[in-house]
Image 1 (cartoon, one colour):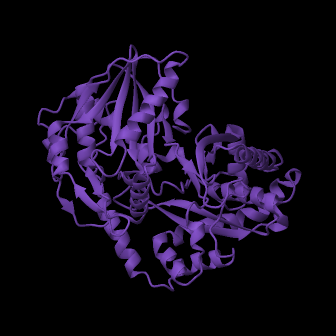
Image 2 (spheres, one colour; image 1 turned 90 degrees about the vertical axis):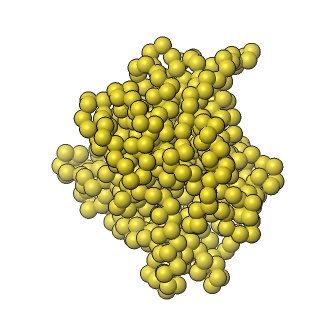
Image 3 (cartoon, one colour; image 1 turned 30 degrees about the vertical axis):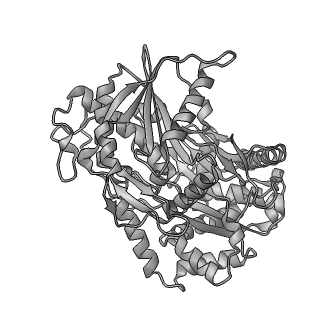
Length: 528
C-alpha cells in the first residue's frame, strides 16, 4: 500500500462496473429512522463545513479512497454480496445525516437497518476517452466524478465501490465521504472486501445475507488466499458507540485536566496560535487554492535500517526520529529554538481495531531544538542524539494528551482567550503511519493498493509521513500556486537533506542495535 494522488493509479482498459444500492435499499435509507446519538466531534465539524459549502454552491470533495488490482475472474454478484456483508458489519457505513440545521444546530443522523442493506452490480456504458485524452486520464476523471456524486454525507450510500474488469483480473476502487472514514479505515477496507469476496466465490451466501446481521454468526467463516480461517465477527465495533463515548468523555473532563493544560501551555507558548506550514505559501489570510498532491522519498530501505538503529541506540522509537527530523528541518528554516506541531493520533481502542469510521484525535507535540537545527552538513548523529530523546518523549506525551478529545481543549482555550480563533481554519497537521502494521498487509488487495484523497482546496501543506519495508516518504496536499509550489520545493529538499545527512553520517552500524519492534502509527492507533 502506498499513499499518493488518485491520478497515479492506472489500470488496463476494461469494462467498468459500479456496485450500487438496490432500489429496496435506497427506499429504506430514505425512510431510515433517526438515531439519537450525536455525530463525533470531527464528524460535526465536517458536516457543518459541508452544509456551508453546499449553501455556497461549491464543490464538496472531502472524500478519500483506495484502489487496487486483483487477479482472477470477476463476479459482480459475488462482489455485491461481499459489499452487503461489509456494510452490514460496519454500522457507521449505514448512516447518513440531515444537515439542514447544521449551521445552527446539530446534524441529525439516520441509521439504515442492517437487513435493508443490499447492492447490485451496474455496468457503466462503454465510453471512450475524447480526442487527445488517454485511458488513464479518462479513468481519473471518471472516478473523481463518481466520488463527487456519491461521497456526500446527506444521502445514502455515502460511498462508492466499483471495478475495472480486464482479461487477467480487475481493478477495484472505493471512495467514501470523510465523515464516515479515516486513513486507518481506508487502509483496511479493500483487504476486508477481498476476504469477503473470496468467501463468496468459494461458497456463495444463499441466506440472503441473514448470517451477517447483528447478533448472528456466519457458519462459513472466511478465509485468506491460502485457505486459513480468519473468523471475523459479523459486526465490528460500532462507530456510533465510539462517538457517544467521545462526547461523554469530553463532558466529564474538567477544564484543569492535565490534557487540557498541555494544550493550553503549548498554544500559549506560541502566541496563541496553532501551527502553520513553516514557509510562507503566498496566500492571503483566509484564502485557499486548488490542491496539488506532492510526495518525496526521504529514505530507502538501507536508510530505514540505519535510522531504526540510530533511534534505538538513543532509546527512542522510530516515531521519535520522524518528529526529530521534521523539527530539525523546521528549526533550520526559521531559527526557532523550539518546535510545535500537531499530530494525528488514532483512537482505535480495544474493540474498535477494525471499525470503519473517523477514529482520530489531534494532540500537540512540542520540544526544544538546540542551535536552531544547525546547517545541513551538521545534521547527523550529534544533532539527532540531542533531539531524539526530547522528540520521543514529546510524542509519548502527545499520546496521553490525545486520550481526551481535542474539542474539549479547544472549547476551554477559546472561552479563556488562549487560542486565536483565526488559526482554527486550516492548521498544519502531521501524521506518521507504519504501513507494515495494518491487518491487510501481505494480502494482494493491500500490497497492490493506493490510498488517495479528494483534491479540493487548501491553505496549508500538512505532512503525511509513511514507511513500509522499502522506503520512508512524505505526501502533502499543497496549494497549487507558483509561490506555494516554490515553497514546497524548498521544504521537501530541506526535509530530504535532513534525513539523508542523518543516516549518511550515522556511526552506529545498523546491525549493532536491535531496533525497537513496538512500531507505532500516529494516524492509525492500535491495529492488531
